[in-house]
Amino acid sequence: MSRYNSVKQIKDKGITRVGTATLPEYEDVNSDILLIATDGDRCDQLATIYYGDPKLWWFIATVNNLSSNNIPIGTQLRVPTAPTQAILE
Image (cartoon, rainbow, N blue to C red; front, side):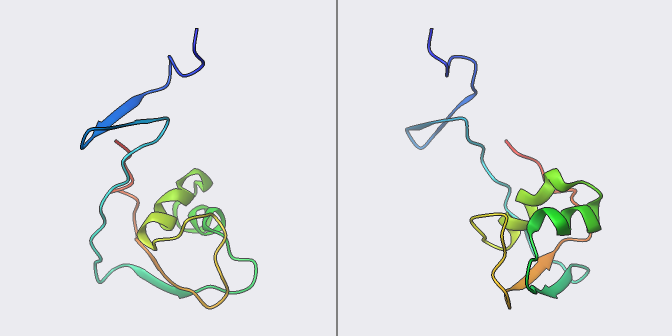
């Protein structure tokens, strides 16, 4: 039995991905919070501050085209005021 049998498989444009999700497209709105990252800022910390849930770190990373939870100092960030579009497919 393969360890991937219970993992969701996603087919997109003829490619099958295992254990991944399709990230949502986000449109900027004027009510978004704009920040500049300082030393030690991370997406999970911002998600806790603004959404009360560190598990939504991926949403802030996605909106800002970041590839990890860590944020380089001086990065301009956009934090949506509500995570209503934070839905993985």
